Amino acid sequence: MPDGLKLGGGNGICQIGAMRNDIERVLIDEAVIEKRLDAMAVAIERDFPDGTLVVIILLKGALVFAADLLRRISRPLEIECLNVASYHGGTRSSGQVDFLDRHFPEVRGRHVLLLDDILDTGLTLHAVGARLREEGAAAVHAGVLLAKDKPRAVAVTVDYVGFEIGDEFVVGYGLDYQGKYRNLPFVGVLKAAAGSRSYIADPGRPFL
Ligand code: XMP
Image (cartoon, rainbow, N blue to C red):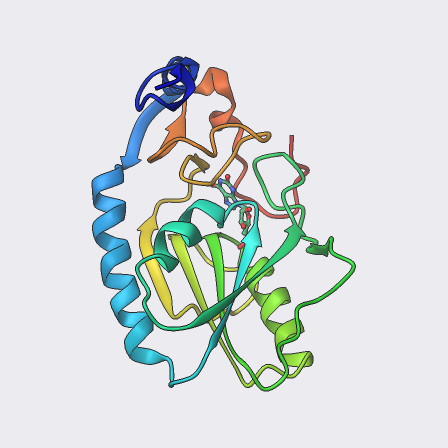
């Protein structure tokens, strides 16, 4: 077998190891996430009416979560992705949600499951949910891997929540800091030197 195909071999492991050194603590490990995804998939299968579901994945943060969750769902579904930005590389929401794609998925009359990595201020899910309803979606349900235990800037209903966490900046399992750490297989908190201590929870202050 060529080296690149060996499981657990090659440079990838070293790089995960280097990223692991930036982590102060693991908040939710892979086994716990997997178990929770099993339960979320059962709830989603139970709740949606028969017919093909449209799943909208918010890039890039929800990519890992969605890939693992959707493979646990056995009913027919279509996958669409949307690029939205509110953090612009820092550790707090800019307060503005930008739609970065030229085209918006066709959702008229469809049942939509909107997936995001984390619920923080609520602005992202609020903005995307409103747009989906404007575009004529028959129903919009939202699911997130993580929800921060804090007041939201706007009221938003989320039907499926993986884990509630404290109000701190987290990375891993799709979530990034300046584009890094998305491929860590767990959710964790960065060491101060790597950036996490500069998390500012108060909306309205400039981010880093
Ligand atoms: P809002 O504030 O709109 O936030 O509910 C949703 C988006 O903000 C990003 N976000 C984070 N990203 N670690 C991250 O890597 C975090 O702790 C965090 N909190 C919010 C994320 O992109 C999410 O989609």
